[in-house]
Amino acid sequence: MIWFYVLINAAVLLGAVQYMVKTGPRQIVPFALCIALLFIYCLITPVYFYAIDRQTPIGDEGLFAFVGKDIRGYYEKGMFFYMLANILFVFGFIWKKLAFDAELYKIREEGLLSLQKKVISLYGLFYLIVLTDIAVSGINPLTILVGSADESLFGHQSATNSYYFRNCADCIITTIVLFAYLKGKRHLLILITLMAFLLFVIMGFRYRIILTIIGLIMVYGMDIGSKLSAKKVLLVSMTIFYFLFFITYNRWNFIYGRFNELAYNPADFKYELFFDQTRGSLTDFNLMRYYEQNPGLDHDYGLTMFGYIFVKALPKFVFPKGEKPYPPPALQTLDYSQELPRYWARTGEATLHYGAFYGAFGWVGFVVMPFLMGLWLRFVVKRNPSSTPLGFLKQVVFSLALFQFVTRGYFPQFVDHFVYISLPVWVISRSLKKATILSHASHEAAYKCI
Image 1 (tube, rainbow, N blue to C red):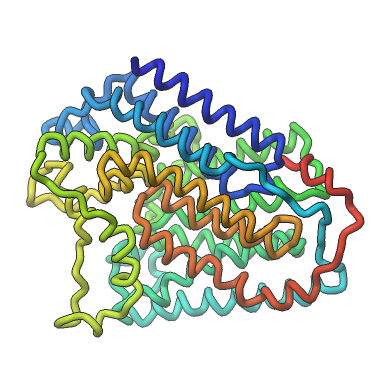
Image 2 (spheres, rainbow, N blue to C red):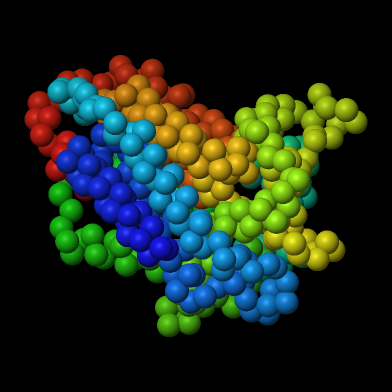
């Protein structure tokens, strides 16, 4: 039956793509991104691992060949619930026809330069805040760049005893996307992007690079006034493909400043890493196994998903002895479900958002929560029509934050990312509104974007 579930799942997602093409992806940016992610994480990757008979969620080679539990009996059940969840998610979004503004708006030419200057100022401010936080934490980023550092920024605790300042790196992502949207000078855009990527790689988190690339793709790919040739699309796709595998394969060399050990030849890259980097479905299946084999284990009924938003947001000093109640119950259960040796360090495994729904509410979570998520995205799209520059940008930044929730499943982290990623848009929103005027372009142009 698993192949039947796979076919229905594929048909549902392809139906969603058809709806996107008919509606115009620019109009429904968060939904378009979710469908793309669901294709990869909930269809292509689990089918690949099923086809190669992957036994455990983390891996079947090296030390992992001797640990972990066999999840092969849960591929079929997992794909059934993915099929059901995708049906309900898509239905929750498209159940009623969305009405879009017939008028299009744009930023007047004389207002672009002023907005560009404000965005560059914000970029410099947030970059300085992150560098200052790193410097006062006792690490010189230059020593990492030249390969002479004894430690890395990856997992290094901030001297400010929080990540409030260092997380301003998320704001840098948005300033780059904003500058591109405002048609900033191409050479300056390349410069600030490379500077940001350099900072992101030494911080050890690739997701910020990925989010920046996705944001730029949204801005350029959904630009009503631009026409992308097949040749340009192919060239850009190949460049992005190479770059993502380059930073993935060389991740630890970047973190520790071992630049003389970087591998540049694409023939050396391990392309199967793509599936290992998108294996959240295996963690979901393993969590199902763990709950079924431990029937006395309770779900946390949303405590981690919603209650820990406040735990994460509040400073440490408001908690007894200055310690937050970590780890959250759902993440603790997730760690236990790996059933690895207790003396091993955390592997950092994460469920998808569907796995988080299951961990919170059980099988009901696979039914109710995807439908509610579809309604939620529909609400966001209706409140932020892409016919206006501000509405479109709000959809973009919401989508970038949503990427983390879909792929990592930790809702408090989504809220955290959303606040930081949205901050630059909030700062310039008033100026953006003042510079917005009615466009003479036809509404039909909105449907011609990629």
